[in-house]
Length: 381
Ligand code: PLP
Image 1: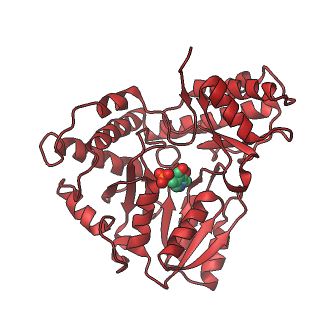
Image 2: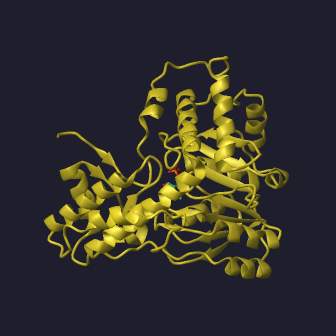
Image 3: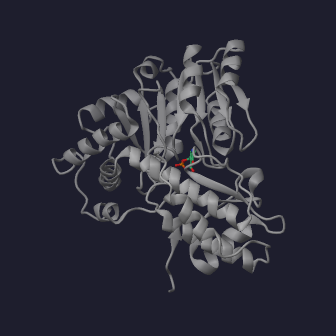
């Protein structure tokens, strides 16, 4: 069939038809009774998905914009901040905090490694910092960090913890209040199953108390918090995206967050089992925590970029290549949000076909079965 497209990347992700229908509704005025109930419900659902009692701030921005709000509100020139990096996005946050004049201390891991809370403790012991900045799910590698333990380490040393949950919120557990996370940043286009364009930022009382005097306007937390609490957005919100997000969050809550998390674990298992059955080597960790994206090494003889290109050009399937030094070496299958096991088997079948076309020596005809079998096993005993 010509033109059929499959979006199997770790973001943007496919959007459910119910959300697409909400996006197509006529535009309403953001200060009218047509919008307010939608806005209110969306904000309530966001608090439920973030598992926080605090206001979750919504910005018309991508995830990076919401992250920049955290930098503008928390970082003062010359102040020390500890940024933990183990991939592309951690490095982005180091660049962003540096751009705002922070004295950035970096706790650097190789791409693909998992940060160790004891290293955070040791570093803060040596050099205290106002906040520790971590990435929950490093989309560039597939590593999902133990944010609860990292937050505990930060708290022991009186530091705030800021979490990039762009690709994790709504896919793997992120207990904002229970884990004491001060700032949780996310975006609409991943597990929240909505088009790109909305940045999300949950902010704790401690973080509000620690705001800096760095100049800011659009991203000023207090301005947005006050306005949202009166359901009177500070600036024109993207009303259609808010309506879409409201429906998407409703779908997640209807499935039940625990069930959603379990589905993601099983999707991760399926992707890894299929890749291994073909004879491929995983780049991302082979464990259940890695439930967001599976990074797979291309066979020695093949450039991963050619796999991505082959899938797209011949089969209409979009997956992601490697970033940074992993470019050409790995390809990534996303499984966040509106995904089921047949999305995984589609991706695996197409990867198998494409690798065969590229002359790679792989085992054919086994990946789909392995994936389906791995998916079948429930994570709850
Ligand atoms: N952080 C992570 C972990 C991501 O996966 C992404 C996007 O891929 C971002 C940050 C950046 O988000 P955005 O592209 O929405 O600005």
